[in-house]
Image (cartoon, rainbow over all chains, first blue to last red; front, top):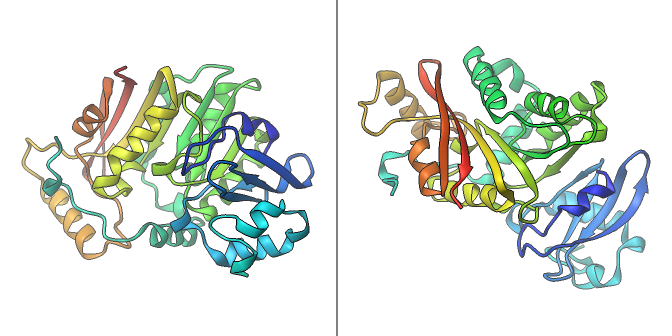
Amino acid sequence: MKKKLMDILACPICKHYPLDLNVFEEKDEIVEGLITCQQCGRWYPIIDEIPFMLPDELRDGKDDLPFLKKWKTKFPEKYLKEGKPFSEKSI
Amino acid sequence: MTDESDVSPVTRSKSEAKSAYDRLSRWYDLLASRGEEKAKKTGLRELAVEVGKTVLEVGCGTGSSMETLAESVGEDGEVVGIDLSIGMLSITQKRIKKVKLSDRVELVCSDAANLPFKEDSFKAVFMSFTLELFDTPEIPLVLFECKRVLNKDGRLSVVAMSKNKTEKDTFTMRLYEWMHRRLPKYVDCRPIPLQEILKNAGFIVTSQEQFSTWRLPIIVALTKKTH
């Protein structure tokens, strides 16, 4: 994913725009990172250059929780503590 | 209004579809028929994507159309492809890297009924063999989302297995629908009354062509927003 995509990305649930971006690992493109929605408190992971912008019912703890654990120290506190649909309480 | 009883329902869940397509992704290109390829090519030609524009493919699958779209928009344009299946997206990602077009391509894992883009983001939307995978009540939601992200003069090109309610169903159509009802996880798409659905969702069909695959009708419809 390239930073430019943030120009059009909106929250798939509450449609808030713009969203916030935290880059965790970057090469030619953003390899791993976090996209967050200030309005509804949801977070979306970027894994292997692909952002996962799925509604809650299609999110899978099997993928999302290891991601949250891996980047725990770089997660903004708000989303680590109260993020939707998963937070550190879900680990 | 569309009479829902005429269209077979989709009984497998979206997460089942997500996993099924992840498993199928490596074999998908071998299963596509020549009729399907021809219809897709026509849909892309009709959409006539211009250099420098930002376009979206809903349900990009293994990315054959993404490659064509990326060539059409040129180095100043942008093509965004979404799919529910990460298996499919990974194949598209490799394909696009191989042809060195990654600079103008973005891939997002998302659901067409909940698009993660702000309104007026795209000049054109392409959707082939995707709309008929959604359950009947969700089809208008997918089209509503396409309409929302398209800009004022935006165009939508849809390629779908279609059925005409006024014509008597052929034997192949009845057999296919029977298979869809009995084996919903394997025969997961089914013919839909495309023109009517597009009209109800607020799109005007500006041109239309018909093809066939396995003796089932495929419609390629180019549309624009009514307002």
